[in-house]
Every structure is written in structure tokens, then in C-alpha cells.
Image 1 (tube, helix red, strand yellow):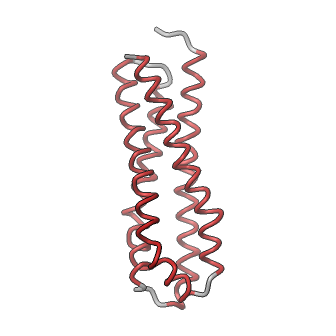
Image 2 (image 1 turned 90 degrees about the vertical axis):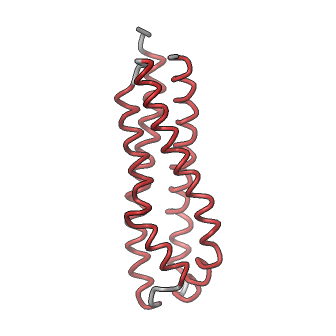
Image 3 (image 1 turned 30 degrees about the vertical axis):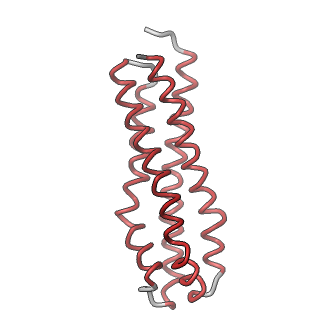
Length: 159
């Protein structure tokens, strides 16, 4: 069972890395691009692409968090090494996911529907960027915790 737990940890680490990388890319590329646009152009762009963004980021974050929780559960049952790191990784991955209904769902909907007054777009994009980078730090933390757990499995005796 520990072998399965270790294999699932590898898969989880890959998913968490993809999720964290996607969020870093969004923060470093997409959000600055959005902020460079005039509010009307940004809202038109977002309205056109909102569905694609959701279809990409939603499943990626759900799968990463789900795998992190599943890995934690299996590792706990298998009494695998590095369980504390997997607890941290799962907690952080779930926190990334929880940020969506807490802030992003409403903000994304307002952008997609054009329900925000154009004069308020720059301020909301500043707020969006801050929330996004906080979520990105959580995602990177989840990934790093998973990586360290993998490294520590190889350096601790099985028992």
C-alpha cells in the first residue's frame, strides 16, 4: 500500500506543479495584459474568453486539490513517510480551490457579464491581482510541500 501511496504522491506532485505553474503564468502574463487594456476592451476580451479560462483553471485546480486529499488519505492509511508535509500540501491545495467561491467567482462573473462600471475596472483588477498572487503563493506552497514529501520518502527508512 505504501508503494501505491508513493505513486499517488508523484501524480499529485505533477498535478500541483501544473496548477501552480498555470497560476504563475496567469499572474505574470494574463493579468498584466488585462491591466494594460482599456476597461471596455478588457471586459470584451474577458466576456469572450471567460468560459475557456474556467474550463482550463477549474478542472486543473479541482484535480490538484482532489489528488492532494486522496494522497493524504492513502498515505495516512498506509502510514507512509512525510504525512505531515502531505497534510500541509492538501490544506494549501484546498485553500487555493476555496478562494474561487470566496472571491473569484463573483469577480469573474462581473467581468464576464460586463456588470462592473468601466471606471471601476482598474481598481478591481488591482484587487484581483492581489487575490490571485495570494492564491498563487498557496499553490506554490502546496507543490513545494509535495516535492519535499517525495524527497523525504527516499531518504527515510520504511517502517
